[in-house]
Image 1 (cartoon, helix red, strand yellow):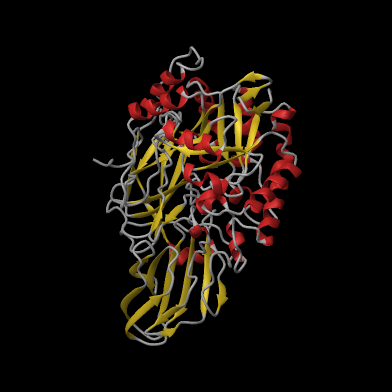
Image 2: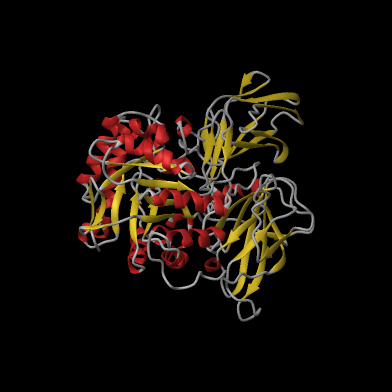
Length: 588
């Protein structure tokens, strides 16, 4: 593959002038069986490059474990990009933001009391250096200098919005170089943060979504010579629970793109294809109020969540064609979807009764955080015996992030971090009643100082002013549901419950294996799995009203769906598989 050079005149590829036409495509948000399809469509829109972050927290879930296979087979993704004739911009962090859980920083870092993330704290830098060595050693053959597709590698991510420690950035750049990265490095920042986040001798790039001429002028003022690159050209946005589905007019976005390309600048769309926050991987924001991100990362991108071209795909392709050749092949058609109809969930398993099969209890005097329990995602069940019967006021210093309050396994209320709730009153039926707090990690904060976001119950818990001590802490990561003991039931269960149903596909049903969408009207809040694959969270709060089901997670014959419903199940306990998505209402 050609090698990228940077000089005062701009980018060159093996000596020839070159314009980066790139788009964000996160391999970890797309089922690996669909990587090739998404990459082909990137080329068909006229892109010559794709960009991806690397989520440290998935690749290194524990300090002594590192994964680079299966759904995290980054080398395979790079091979597919290369086969499609695409270059790659690699953004390994260590911090990535990306509306991703914790900004990609592993939760085990927060088991260290007082650790300062994104800083020269020796504990943090030691962990980063180890991560870079584990990640970059096997990626060396994929650098353009060695015939691979990776043209350039990013240092940190929008650091100027967080800090101004140039020595920290220099350490990261040195660590990248020490681990074999010999392609150009770059930083990215919003225009107002360029001075704080740039690194001498490293290409500075800017993130924006409008006023291209003005923002590129700010970048040029900061760097009088060299290439101009919008490393995140925002053409959509993400959604949060309780908000609306954010969209951006395709024609307006295309005009902004035209204005950018007319200056001669290079571009990386954020996003070309957003994908999905499968499982528990969504992040959150906290600007005085905690706001978790939804499961879908559709981002109103040129390729929608299911990988189908949108109006933006066609509009952007037409703009790109004014400045560079685009493939003669037509815009891809929408892929086939299947509508399975209604499926009944006939079996149930109460979570409190199943909890011992899902995680081991850890005794402690005070509640332990998820990080102290060595847990990344999911729930913790905290339990303690109450001393006396009668009216009581429970006060919880910090709820991270949502606690379902149970008395002897029966729900009595909810405490939500998002609503700044810390207290709940109830009547204890008897001395020795078991208080349960089922606490959900709804997504670690991914932006700003709030990234030091420890989950569970980080503070004290009191009853009528007296601290409650003597707890059991049971991690419920729900990485496997094998321990569930389902039984047929006709009654509608009360409280957190797993519900299970089956449906047929393939030859026996005359239904093809293709994408579909799980609609959950009538259910309240929880998580969904198909054949053990974690689709993500649902919540009647909206805006998202359906979950994307990738075709590759389905199989011929019998298929299984499991819901963990935390509150009120659909009265008929049914779900509906349709051939259309519903991401909710948009802002008027």
